[in-house]
Length: 234
Image 1 (tube, one colour):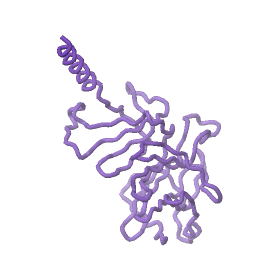
Image 2 (image 1 turned 120 degrees about the horizontal axis):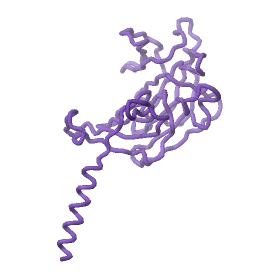
Image 3 (image 1 turned 30 degrees about the vertical axis):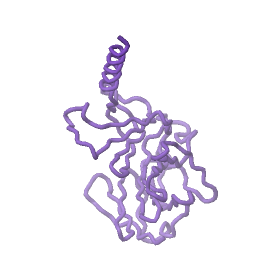
Image 4 (image 1 turned 45 degrees about the horizontal axis):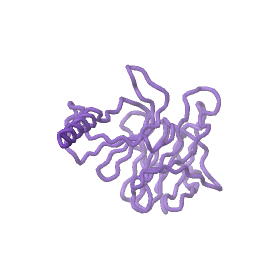
């Protein structure tokens, strides 16, 4: 009888976990990075019943090493890590860094949706997620550091550096500064290229990429326009 009860309990547990699989809602203004075979998604606005909820701190990844069918939600290998307690942010940007490129760094973003008051209140400009320990750290840098901002992009380099450019300082003001973040020492430096005569105008809503030769490119304003921004020497 006890053996029978054990089998029944095992069946019920398998049934529960099978049908309680995590399936994320649609969302916008989130951040995303790829580490090994895991595509991570962080924050943003979550869409529920054709409307958007307040800013979410959801963190989850898609294991792209496993086969799945996009027409079968139950087959998609999502893994929910929201329990780790990440920051509430939208319009942030994220890059990979650290000694082994296993750290996620989130920069800037808006902490609440109010159009009045400080939209960056009660948040750290840089948040770090250790993908091995599954732990968050709020990074506090001293000295010369960027002004908090949103709706910008970052790109990482092989030497542990991450570059960020421009973005919204508030709802009406942008700046065209170029900052370099050292993910090994967790320190900032303002690039000399910020004051270059050919520096681009302030911008937001762009996408940044880097090439193997250390050139930082931006994709601007939803059109196929690639502009060389700076050649970064570190």
